[in-house]
Image (cartoon, rainbow, N blue to C red; front, side):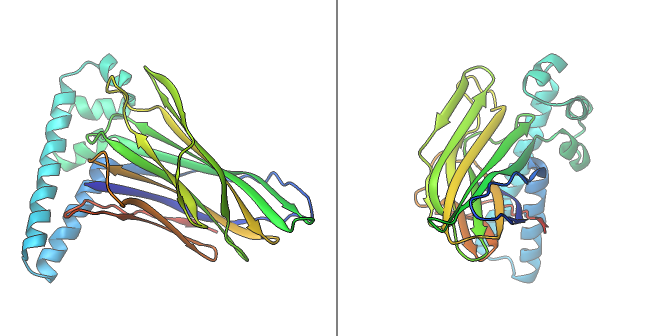
Amino acid sequence: MIIALIFTSSVVPAMASENDEIDNNINEVVYTMNEYEGILSEIEEINIKLVTNGKNVQNMKRAVELAQHRDGFISYIYDLKKLSDIELEAMNFNASQINAIKYFDGSDHMARAASATMNCSYSRTSYSYNSTTDKTYVTMQATYSWSGSPYIKSVDQAGVAMAGSIAQFAYSSASCVIAYPSTGTITQYNPTISLMAGVRFDVTSCDGNGAMFTSCVVTYSGVAQGHVTVMAIGAAYAHKTVAFILNGGLSISTSGNSISFGVTPTYSYDLMINVSKSYY
């Protein structure tokens, strides 16, 4: 199962004179994705397919799997209900989530309120154009964090992308810094590179003690030929139940100022949630 939490792709004015660096960073909370809401969205989608496309084997199997995911999530919240407030706070649940867990009654409404959420913000941290080389240099950063501890805990993927008005950005460098509450901070420098689009990192969602990361920060630098005056940046997070997918996972592509994120599974009956919003 993969839950692809696809965040905003923003078009960014990048006006700068020759050799200028500008500090018009964009840094905003892009999206907050509710884990349980994602499961319900997929259940609604498969129910529509069962009506419009008929009850074929594939749709029926997917409906059964999604129902199992929902039941498993409900059981997970009932297990959390047995914990103390202090224990739930240690799992990074906020006061509102803890209240929903303590008064959980099995309903979808209370499950949404108790569910862990993934939060993402991103920014363009530097921009410059060099007239001598006729190249544009850009660095962006995306920060991901969990509020609460999700039902699904595995190796996820975090990705970022940038696109240019007159040219696409080639990979220059990237890093991923993950902070865990009990085992400290690790840094990765081995991204999967999407040609002229962006990068993605495999992210272990919880440490050896079962604690979710407190933050995951992906930094990506790219270079484009020419003076790029308008560009786009974007971020995505793929939340999945399996630790490894051969030739699959989060995909990134660009066309002009358009950035597209998706999930490419190599097995059947995946849960995929695609959420996007744009600012111009």
